[in-house]
Image (cartoon, rainbow, N blue to C red; front, top):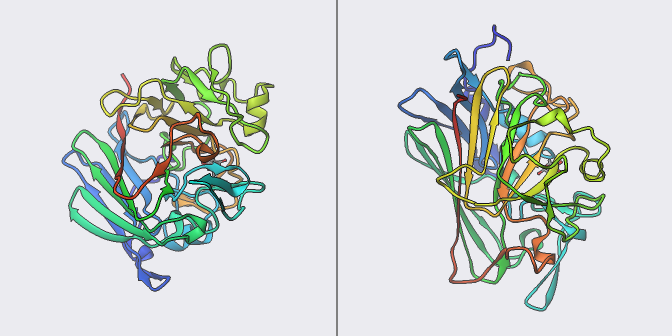
Length: 357
Ligand code: BGC
């Protein structure tokens, strides 16, 4: 973000529309530290996160749109969205479950990505603002919507803490055995939403292994050590320092677009930390999920007009999607994503902001 551009939340009126017969709006969370977050119930999308930088200047660290139409008209990058019913890819859009094979829409040829044709990212969720720091959104995904069995009742609670954390609590229940893998797809630029490349940010990911992918971004099934590869982020590392290496995995992902196997998923100690080189804003990620998809905006191509007059240029944002591993329904060795009637899917993730020491 340039100095003349002051970070501010988009106008709520630009989000007050009717989509699929349901009202959309912009919900604002504020904490005692002056941090502000804006979320729309269209796809449960995080629109803005305003945090102070090293000079105390309020900075919007989310790349996104300033109207609900922006999000609706550009579903592909999944800006800020809750992803479901299955976050990430399912090979060839097929999976077995209790002896039956299910077929999904192929929206990322030859695979299914982030739910299918119309995922949770493009549904209007029912929203209830609990108080100034808490927003609850719910969505009922009907039996066989997008080809997934069972009525899935999903709930996501966003809470802005007084430690400058945005906590995301997910729950879901089903009436038939199904698969579920929910995540959030916020695109961060810790230098600010108009801050240019993220390649000079420093990232640390507490993962000793990751899941290499084939050229269609489906895990090969191997859990590979990061040591000695460009995937070793166990020490703070400049994101761009190895991203263009002639490495088969970087070529397959067109950059970083891989699932890291978290060494110790936890809500108490971070699984990843990223620092913006210009702002010194540090983001810590905490999660109970076994995996973290680190995506460096390799498919961003500047075709969308974003907040602050920015374009969504190549690698001007990154995502850290906490989730189960891609294609888990077809990989019995990966942690299970099966949810049965009577069970409760329950998982939390937190993105916490501070100034790097
Ligand atoms: C995927 C990328 C994809 C991006 C936007 C990420 O979660 O891993 O391959 O391009 O989402 O759709």
